[in-house]
Length: 436
Length: 62
Image (cartoon, rainbow over all chains, first blue to last red):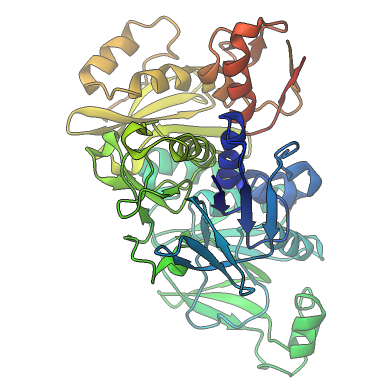
């Protein structure tokens, strides 16, 4: 049997490894549009961006895989009738099973000022290195548009480098899926570290340094435009973020952190259902084709914590686990495949706070603080929907989160969970002023 | 089989605790303790713990 894995990041790598450890001795091809071997992305907004890690330290070990690597080869289409994956270089790869793990890309700014030099997104190693070069040049003023996990981490990293940072979001607080209570804590954390916050404020666009393209304004800016190509093109450099209220935030470097888009357009003509993730059943098998399975950020699959509605999860652990789960199912006949049901886990490191969460906090109707250390620096909150706990979020409380994680596998009634917390001697303590 | 954890890398994600609860434990202060020598019967779960570690801090020997 010949198995093709399309996508050479974490989900694709874990799929390939699991195929081999589950005994697949046949052909295995891993296709990736980047030229690099698989690497881990969480350090890109933190250690790699700060210069504390090298690119090599981000590499994921992939020794002994005995796979054929097709790197730098983007997938452009799928011929399901002929069971062939079509590549940008004109090649077509035959498969018996296909595992789609093409992930996401950063959403780019398309509005006014999109052409300016100094605008960055952060998704891959090259993005991180390009941003790092600009952060290291002089002392640029940094504006981060979007206070989700990537934006908040980039703001913390840039602040850690001693730069002036403004964090901007249309939402009233950072980390929208974690709700107002924890979002406010995150806002306070950034303020305490000297980040300027502009919240509940949309962005109208970006203003250049004034002279227009080719006037030499770019070269005179805080850091010359991004490399020789941009210099040759004479691109004007960003000077400010223009807010919807008419205000401006002066900036030499802008990081646009407006979320991610699944890389699924290449499947548009394939007949697979896209939402825009590839719609799968609980076993990560495409609802349209038993020979196509999916893993990672571009996968939509029904989740018990969402009452069977499809969810799409853009986190490290989900990509790793789904890669392995899709691989095991790819080797089984359709009737013998097993559902993938894990409660999603994710984390974010900002300054000295480790935020960890399990479940689906974004679907919660409310987020309630349930444990807090006397000093207030460690806490756990739960996300509640229809009376059930469907998420738990911890600040600096890893061991406690593991306790919740075990229980969320079968989402408990919130009352039962709170009673169990009250009876647990290892809980951090009752939060003061809950409900006030 | 020997289990090594690079504590310079460990960030207390607890993925290993979840994958192999009899081998890895988090203390109250979120520091990790682990069994350094484990039997063959635990190989699968310890390998899973190593793969699950987002920091790639776990190395197995033997």
